[in-house]
Image (cartoon, rainbow, N blue to C red; front, side, top):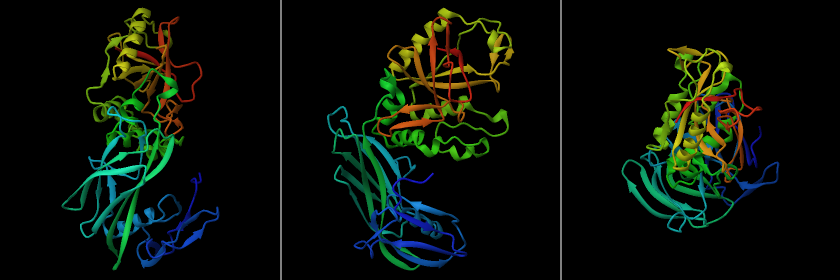
Amino acid sequence: MPLKNPRLVFCANIGNDIELPISSRAGANRRVKTDQGKATRRLDFVVHKLEPILKFADIIQGDLYELSRDVVFRACGGAMEFQTPKGRKLTELCIDSSADGSGRGRRIALRCKFPPGDKNPSLSCSPSLKIVSQKVHRHGIIDFVIEVVLLGVNQRISYVIMQYDTTSFGTSYRADETLRITLGQVSKHANFESDLLAQMLGMSSDADHLLAYYRVLNANNNQELPRDQWDALSDNPLKQNTGPDPKKWNCGGALMTFGAVYAPRHYVSGAQLYYRTPSPSKLSAVHFKKETVAAGARKIRQQLKNGNFVQVFVGHNEDLTVEGGIIKPSSNTHYITLFGASASGNEFIFFDPWPTGSIMTYQSGIMGPVKSVFMGTINFVESEGKIRSPDVVSGRHKYVILTGP
């Protein structure tokens, strides 16, 4: 799929020669036109004999030399990068432009890391942001805090820029790297009463939470791919192990890890059986306890309203593994995590760690409508005494909750 607003086509495979832009400074005042007529900075190039470390033609987006400088420093053994305070690499971030509880724009703590040989670092940013503090540490670390000063915008692209003196292949020059930040309104899905993805991650001032929000919704992490290509989705923090050995499938573990990392003390599950025992070995024959299920739906709604993700045990295929009258985990059961409830309390949205197990269009606001291959909806159907998937779903599975709060 072509990228939006391409600015430069860069072919990196030239036999054993790799053509690498190493400077934007010398041509910074000259402008060239792309095939779409977009004005862009011109780059200088150097040709160096290397092993072919990159074999593709790609479109560089945003900061023109970002990808190419990554190639240079991969050859040289290091590269400057933006990070979260916990050390996770950053190239893009989404920040809610609404005021925080104090009435000001959100303040986000970030850091830069660059090779020790680089010197004279200088931070700057777009006018919609300001740098309120920075501290230079030894070993090439700068901790800094940005604040959103342009409040209430629907969507605005801003940048944080680090400039520094560096050397590549014996050539010294002034380089810079860019962190792309989207400012906008983070919304709860479809005016839901609760949506903890938006409320706890997207509206956060914690860079690691904001990065997780971005990774969950990023289009590259939500592609509908053949199963043998699912490893390409591994950057999505919701994805479980999907290898060929069912014994290593870790749907519950993957979701609990997500909860432990991004929602400690706000992640619950339940051991209440929603069905009568002893259970039959066929899902269609399971008899549900209507009052227990109705009470469970109310508890789920309240837990979500209180800011707690809720993990539940579900069935999706007919054949069940039953021991001592209790349904046990198998390849025909699954774990999902509910993270939002509608105003009526009869519809819930959930995370599904199995790629394309569930598919839904999530209304994010800041990132627009996102077709997620890790989310779905499930409904409390009072007349049936079940919490189950709608009759028509886009994903591979239909679920019914077997065990919950």
